[in-house]
Length: 455
Image (tube, rainbow, N blue to C red; front, top):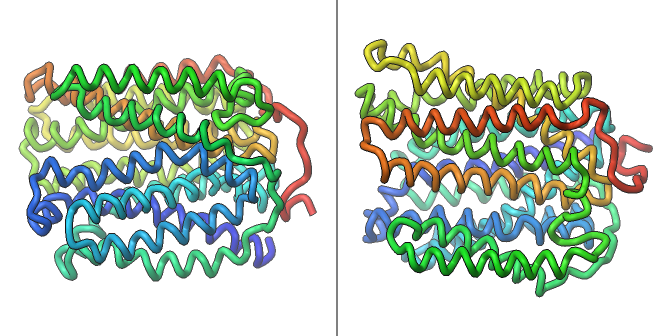
């Protein structure tokens, strides 16, 4: 592989790490932010919520813009916006300022997350796409694993503004490496602003409604109803289009649709488990915060290692079988964690955490590869946007599920109940994966040669 594609791959992976790392290091800083900005712990959570809300509402519009203007232009714009917003975060004098800057950060991050794999597809041949997605999954897993430790180190040595200032040199390096990204013309389709507004209404209503479900049920129901109405109007508006904002053209394909459904299922299981495990380790097994983090670290590390093998296998083994196996293995790990006797201590729990990471790693890479290979090259942006939307939808649903479980069950039982339900979602994802064809993915529409690999 020549130097230019390597620069392009480095730019995509570095930008992805930047976005994922920023999300994970901020979580550990919430207590510090609450004290420094003189706000309640509940109010400090807005720093996370604003970022997630911007991400989920902007993924599909950024994907559409990438297809219209060219993947490289929108990706580079996203990195630029993310980096500039990081400076605003570091300079924030108050919570409203920081929340607004984090929202802008999320908008930039959405362009990176929705178009990263689409750009990788332009620089590697289809036969190596599984390996490329494996690199991307490894980068995400390592960033997720390292985030809390890096955040704690920065907080202890330099203070919370440096959590965001550290993005500036990394963002500048990504922009420099981004010169190697392929310069491809877009379709010049205009972004439908009404559809983009309806899309934002759908996700804003769902996220806000879920957040208020337990405290203000009436308001939550109104928000859910508004989201449902906006979704109906959006689907009616976008349905007749050849390349809709909501990728209905891709979802009409059974294999692609199955990939999205299974992705949501497995991310519900992952999110619920990653919220349940700290409570199980801390309250049931008596571990300190540090030891709780250490016992959970094998999950993302195992994903990082497994993603490489899964990338290689996904180019050789039918997706249905790999994803099915991954979902079942993840379910077994979650069920084992739920049933692990407290008398045996956290050491008995650790192998099940590794099994969870193994299963998730086996599932994620081939499932994502299938989604991108099914989509025609010119719709890679839409595939990336929908893949990111499925991931965030599953994560938000998993968080809401655990909130309901903690409210319904006593603290001593809630984590194990959550892990059991998470296992059911992972198993459902694995079994549904088996419904797809075992033949190699085929694009849903006309394809064209693209990227350096086709030259």
